[in-house]
Image (cartoon, rainbow, N blue to C red):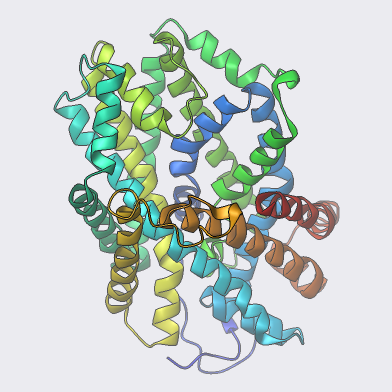
Length: 468
């Protein structure tokens, strides 16, 4: 496919541009973007990092970080996608050249696309854990089990490369099935079914949590700030998680923004997505912490909270098999909608750069990602002693899975987000930004100054903190 030099759909003049598909409605984009943002970060990671960092005070700082860091960058990424009207890499190059800057700025989107690809390779493995736990809950594997027995179920899964490969394959096949069907028939149809279902399932689990007799304790833990329990590290964790949970720095919002109609408000939709993402995270906390407290478990149990602590609780409670299954179906849906968005930027790029059709691009990207995921699977068992960078003290004992997680979450995502803020805040013309955002002067100036000055500093602090 020959890449156009300009995009008439975005108000430029030029020839040879094939009109790009668009979301059928503003709500379709909101559901898709929310589906991307709502994932394992909300339902798996947010509750345990909240538990580790003292509860309510951490939540308050997290909400401030969403508003001051996450939202401005999200708006910037969507703006790049819609203004460029192409794949993330091509959009960045096109916009940079149009404003007289070097095309090397396309590397920013390239960093994001690489991050999305690498994350999906191990995210699919974790999504497979959720799928396998649906079956375990339904068949009553957790019922009446001790903490040791529940732990053995999880360690047994991680120690079995063939089981992990099976569930990794099933999960990646679900992702490829949706992405391969394109925008309207694939992405849009999937999110219009999965996202409402996810909210219903989450509300059902919250409803059950209200019957445990410890809902008040869970609510207080989340919403009663105790700043004496909040550390500097906790503030930086909140900032980093706010960035991660909105799917920023992955080129995802650029890809989704490229399908967004000119008549849709970028600011309004970005705010809505941020609010919905935050609501899901808080509801996940309200669903999980009452169950944790009711069973006298530890809210700061770390990553094992979902796959070890909660199954123990489900195994002891009335109707535990039913609500356990509902919870892990919820977790699977959340992981699925996020994984779809991680594959999309790569497929978009292959369609444009390599002239592949949607199905072929999905097969190439999906199978490549599936193959890379095998390394993460083996690092949990057969290759558990393989530490490629173990000669450096900073990475001593880090497996391939650990290194991929570190590279993406601690390096590529904050670096990509920082460069997006610098590009939009310092390189794009204010005229183009005002035209694209169509906001009142006061609101625009608040966003613009935040993106230019505060956001880059905040992301840079997290970036440096992660590296030292």
